[in-house]
Every structure is written in structure tokens, then in C-alpha cells.
Length: 370
Image 1 (cartoon, rainbow, N blue to C red):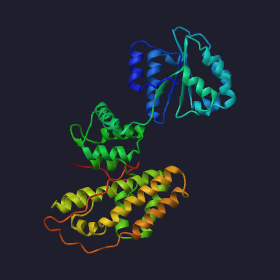
Image 2: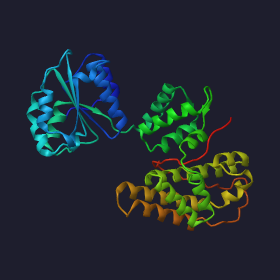
Image 3: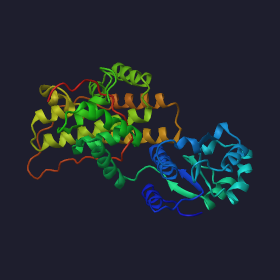
Image 4: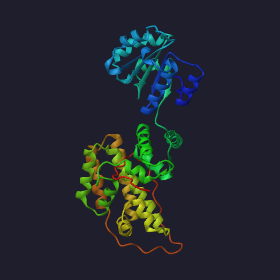
């Protein structure tokens, strides 16, 4: 199997005029796949009436012989034809077999682009395709690639984000680049030109329905109000929120609780903590008392266990998994008296470093003034 190339390498090859007859655009990030196909079409057909020499098929609605017939046609009023086969992983095995002869001897005047999140490596079709086609890697961005991509997209739409906004935007969109792009476009229309986007802006635009936010959920957990906790969960699920993103939203809020408690230990003002947690400054101290360090450590462990169950598809229905976690969090958050401030040299508990969980923010409200 030939080495896969990145989106940037594909663009560099196209800029140099290096064009293949077969491409496999594969990977789980749908935005990167669409960008790769768009780059190929623009380079091969140019702007304007490009659809005249471009045919689009879907793997679950086409036969192998149809693809071969179309790809074998001669381009009209253009040097190249383009045939795009999306959802190539849905091609039945029999139809894949019909494509094998073409893969060995493709039409020089046609570029066929197979697009799929993932192909079955055991199939002869996949093995033949990966040997003959140029593979474009569209896997999700690695951690080190996220921040540069996000900053580049923000610059493209003309906005600036502070560090907390970047973190929340990344986690709130669950790693989906399309979701990030949509949120950036919404922020462009929402935030006045010249102002820096804050975490509150991102949270507000992710909102759906009043009283169903992660902040409301945390308040209910702190109060050990099991009925309200389950009601908020139900409202989010009914609104179409993904269980994994709801879980990640709560994990994000728990990490914020660690941060706020550290600020409080170091003598930070309660007003700053109130802005972070979006509650009345007079209630900050009592609220933090509901989340002792032992509870926070146990909570992060529970959230990680639930994350593994949801991603692994085991352990029961997603809604039941979330209900179980939330009820355990209610049971493990007793109200305790505030311990005395540690003396000089005393050991201060440190936050637990938790791995990132994909999430979505469900924050309501509008930003009406600055």
C-alpha cells in the first residue's frame, strides 16, 4: 500500500500539475474529505460549468458497471472528466468485483475519486484500490494540529478568540470540524467587529432551551436534586443532543470547578469565580462547598468510565448510562462544612488531569451588551 498524503500535500501536487487517474479520499473527518474532493474538482475542471464533465454516484445506489461505463467516456470540451463515488464503503462486494479490471487499466482522460470514511481492508477491491490510487488521508486532526487549524479558520471569518473560548469551542463541537466552522460563522454574526470572542459568547450560541444548560445541570447535582437532574437530561436528549456530547459537556464543567476552586484557594475574588460558573457571587462559596475534592476526583473517574462505555457501545443504552452517572454524582456530592484555609506549607490537593471527552454545550441566553 502506498503512503497516504495529507490535504496540504494534495494541494501542493495539484498546484504542480501532478494529477492521478484514481484517488481514494478516506478518513473520519467529513469536512476534510469534502475539502479534498473540492480541491480535486477545482483543479481538474476549473470554475464555472464544471458539472458538465463531473458525475456523482453513491455506493449504495450504483452498480460497478455504471461507474466503469461513466469513467470510460471521453471528456467533452475539457481535457478531463471527473467521477466521484461517495460512500464507497457501501458498494456491495459483487459491484466491487466489477471495478477490479478498471482499477488495473483506468482511463487516462478521467479521474475517479472514491470517497469513504473507511474501507474494509479484507476486500480485493480495497487492496487493489490502495495499491493503484493516490490515498488522501482525512483522519481527525491530531491534538497538535487543532489549534493552528482553529486559528486559521477564525482568521478566515475575521474573528479572534481568547484561550478559554478556543478550549470550549473545540470541546463543545466534539472534534467535528464542520461543527467548529458553523459555530465560527455564527460568532461572526454575533460578536461586534474588533471584540475578542469569550467563553461566554461560545457558550451562549451553543444554547438551545432555558433551564437545560450544563450550568443548570451542575447546580442540580450540587443540590442533589435527582428529579431535576433527570429532567434536564431528558430535555437535552429530546432536543437531539448526542449522549457523548452531553457527557463531555459535564466533564468540561467539572474541570472548570477544579479551576475555580484553585482560584479560591489562592485568594481569588468570588466575582471571578461567579463569572466562570455563571452564578450569583453571593452563592459561590456555598456552591463550591457542595463539591469537595474527593467528589471531584470520583466524578472524573465516573465520567471517564461512562465515556468508554458510550464509545465502546457496551454497558446498555446511552440514556441509561447517563442516568446512572448523574444519579451517582448526586449521591456523591454531600454538603460539607468548608474546611479551614490550609496553613503555610500545608499540602493543597491538586486537580486531576482528565483526558478530553467530546461534548456539546447547551447554554441559553443572548449577548445583548458588552
